Image (cartoon, rainbow, N blue to C red):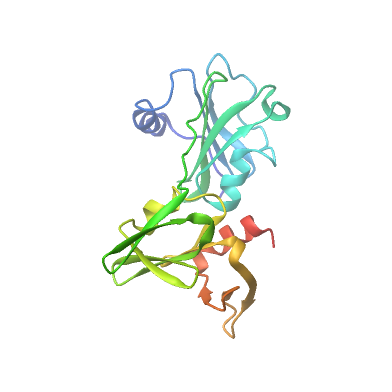
Length: 221
């Protein structure tokens, strides 16, 4: 069954959710399968119409492919001028779809300040460790530990908190692990075809099925 245009009732639900946080002159689009099934443009965005095919380099295409929240500054080759766009994976009538917010050209997204170091605890001693030296971070027994220079440190942050504040060379590979991609030695498969990452210090970490696509996308393999 193909995607159909969303009902007025459905549109009202989206508007209630979105009106509190997006600028009034932002545009809203809904994409399903390979085309846009709804478009509510502002006066600034008149470049899409219902039925248009999804551009392969667009946020909509990335959301449909990865099923992950995606934000990107789109260059002028797609919309005629640069725009900041955010996309969210959703479902419409049990079919995978994408909710796209196109911000006005005057909108500038806040830059994320990433951690430059983590302060870890060992017994009664605290040590600031540059993030570049951290090989991986682990959630174990309801506590979070990070590893650097063959030492283990405890931190009060959760993996979820760290995931959004670490530099882009850190990637979540498992509900229990975040790793620094610069310390990867190789990636192999075990006898059950699950991916295993071996770090340069010899430590092996599993990759869970839910994070494989993220790993492939970042490392391009």
